Image 1 (tube, rainbow, N blue to C red):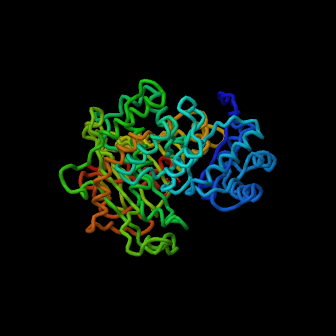
Image 2 (tube, rainbow, N blue to C red; image 1 turned 60 degrees about the horizontal axis):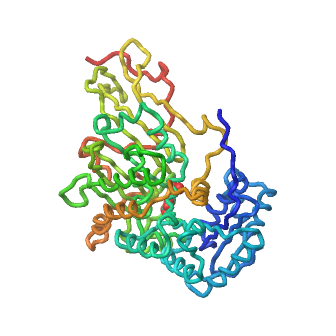
Image 3 (cartoon, protein in one colour; image 1 turned 120 degrees about the vertical axis):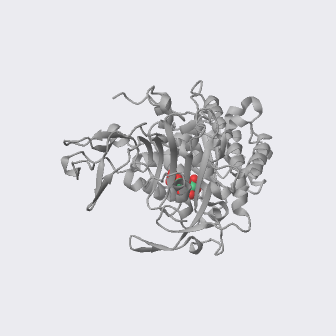
Length: 533
Ligand code: BG6
């Protein structure tokens, strides 16, 4: 196997994390930066400066992060490299909503940079409440922390989601930011794009010649994208989630980005803007799966109700911490959409995401059309009742998480004296193929932003196109007479989500069952060996 590419450490960088006392900093950002440092991507001069409101010394900041990093560092951590990394960590107390604090912040950052021989090339990570995105940048400008346009590569800003809450607010935020920063300084993060298995979609599609000719309306029956989570609304997130809901929290960003990658045209070159131009075209071609009728014909909202999961009582969404007891926020969203272009016209795309699903799974399943003729009359029995089953379609599944693999289901002959069809899988699994763990999404994305590579970040026009498509759904779901349909926690959403597919004779996959590795074909799996006449 080929060796990893040699690493050229980034010599001159100050990473500033605004909102450094939040959960994201301890669970994701610091473990990712530590790993980049340990792997030699960050030099011994680089600085990571946490900025937040609470007073804290460097020592107590480091001590808090040590505890978090021991829990969250990929493949664990060793004290020796952590101690060296911790020397790079500093804390500056500042109230991000108080412009005056930014003058002091600037002085403290500059003084640290001077002490470490750094020239002030900065990456600012806005890990704050969304209402502080713009004020933070405005205060940076007022404190002289935004370099002039000719030196704009000295400052890059990563902005977490939610970037707006509808098309208007996203547009107005972009406009306001663009008065102070140029588009190539803004890195809107969608951590799904940093996942190794998501990036592999592009390589799989455009680095192989055999699959791409099949990715179109002539061969594909439909595509399903699922982002399912078993967790409910964990401590502290209720306040945010109850305002967002599943459509804004996951579907508008993660699910639509997956859709773009699986549906886009090959880019002319593997460069940020070429790829983002192709993704934008997909978003601009999105259309309701069943146009002309009410939104409920193609968009389903659900909310989890209390239920017992594996014998354990799980509370309803409405009883979770910091949730309005009368909330109509959806914890599940399913859409049937079309991509009205030459490649995909007529192919339904079914998208779903939800909390309190039966399993944690993210996958994209491409179901191909059936062979034109069912030549093999396979018999299957359920107890004493036997019958001929339909031909089985080929399915190509990108398992994004938790199992990282790609599997192709096709039909094989069951051993025996007749032609009986057995669906079997051909699997490529990361774990069995590559040694070493996969990099965490935030490692890749932080490094790309430091290097100035925006390929895996979302451009403002992409974001606005996504909001524009979803705006009518959001409006319909916010109207006074709309209520999400309840589903018992631990199930794949409400009945209406199943009806979306049933009316065209299709059904959702059960990823927990179908993601299981193919059973070996043995005579033991053959139940009946004589065709029914
Ligand atoms: C985040 C959402 O963007 O993605 C969360 O805000 C969600 O609600 C999370 O749980 C899922 O990410 P992952 O990487 O765990 O699938």
